[in-house]
Length: 173
Ligand SMILES: CC(C)(COP(=O)(O)OP(=O)(O)OC[C@H]1O[C@@H](n2cnc3c(N)ncnc32)[C@H](O)[C@@H]1OP(=O)(O)O)[C@@H](O)C(=O)NCCC(=O)NCCS
Image (cartoon, rainbow, N blue to C red; front, side):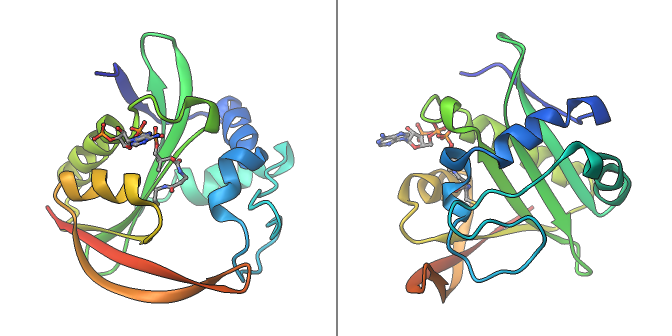
């Protein structure tokens, strides 16, 4: 079992977020979506996060009580391996996200990181966690289901202009 903790990054730690978001292997899951926000690269899924943006990101995101964002820190190797986040909506449900940096994938970080995130959300008064996961991400879905998420819906999205079935999943806390 991985020896990890959720670590709230400081301004000087944001190089890791920049590194993740500029790595096409890590961000490939995010490519090809018909979204238009500044710094998004349709072809690779990468998102620009230059140092000039770090302070305003800390002010907007890290200091927002409805957002939780943390790095996954491997305590044995003292390395950041990815990040988790959730955003609480008006009904006290929260949308979760988890990204493991490409080079650390397949090593068993997902389940323990999500377990810590679930515990954190519970302690923070969140009533349910929700996510949208493409049907093709079978290994990720398996872990979500094992941890008590259920499929509550599905919709069709476009990835590189092709239809993609996306599952809506939820776990009551
Ligand atoms: C999805 C993601 C978080 C998984 O992270 P990861 O660290 O590679 O995951 P793990 O190593 O913990 O593997 C997850 C599960 O898949 C299984 N798995 C991993 N590689 C596998 C392989 N090659 N064949 C079969 N199963 C495999 C693992 O056994 C594990 O299941 P277990 O906990 O029951 O043992 C990572 O691929 C990622 O960041 N993807 C992009 C973002 C994303 O899709 N986020 C999730 C949906 S929002």
